Length: 272
Ligand SMILES: NC(=O)C1=CN([C@@H]2O[C@H](COP(=O)(O)OP(=O)(O)OC[C@H]3O[C@@H](n4cnc5c(N)ncnc54)[C@H](OP(=O)(O)O)[C@@H]3O)[C@@H](O)[C@H]2O)C=CC1
Ligand SMILES: O=C(O)[C@@H]1CCC=N1
Image (tube, rainbow, N blue to C red; front, side, top):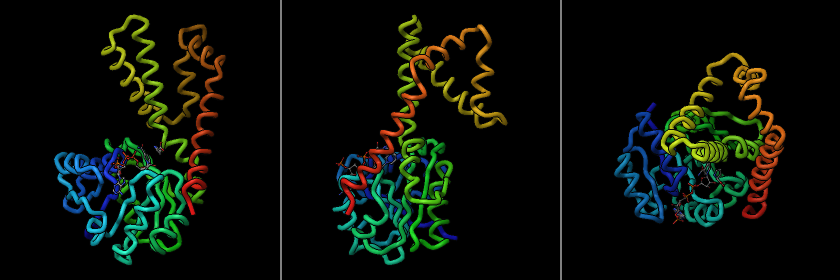
């Protein structure tokens, strides 16, 4: 099967992560077009990955088999409406916008095959995690196409309902930021205790990577892996007790609920 021609509308952080991951994985760069208001974004993506830059959204989608809507939710309506007259009738639309429902997108863009997707930025290093949901107009071949694109940059989970994209946003869409925050805090605490910033950073990053890889390659769950680090009357125990006393689990749960709530609110605020 020949590779689909993919056009990204919006060439910001998330589009760059998917494009970078795809090209590094061997997807032909001459099959990828990106359109953006910022010429700098297009120049950077062309320079780094060799994709085709196109400043005009209408021209960018003219021959596209797959159109990835990668603009902010706040501008999705005018962007989608502007594309409507220029898309091929059998184009597959993949929206990665937080909150924006398939119903809203089809009102703006027309009754097309639409896959709603929540990816994350580790796609750039092929360790992304995406949740996907397709509307009834999406054929099996188009689902396959969406799966192929997102699988090239990480794992893919097809969801049973569109509503599940809100908690997926809270877990994996926004999730990298939680780990980066934790890493920032660990680095700062290491520095406060006397380590150089370079050493604290190296040790923190390698520990995060090692913990994730160990969890993925282990046949026991993460709670058991945590217990295996926590020797009775040892050092880790004191840190874990401190986290639990300070309500870490509630803190995480409240943060993720706030994330999900915002995703639902965005749909109401910006949808039809
Ligand atoms: N960042 C992330 O980790 C994730 C983001 N997402 C979703 O991805 C989408 C993009 O987010 P992100 O990449 O972070 O945002 P960015 O702001 O980095 O990228 C969006 C790009 O779209 C451009 N743009 C705005 N209007 C238009 C237009 N009319 N035509 C073409 N391009 C336009 C913007 O230009 P300008 O800056 O000039 O407005 C910007 O360069 C959002 O909907 C977000 O919800 C989903 C999962 C994770
Ligand atoms: O913060 C946001 O709204 C986007 C969606 C998920 C990650 N970033």
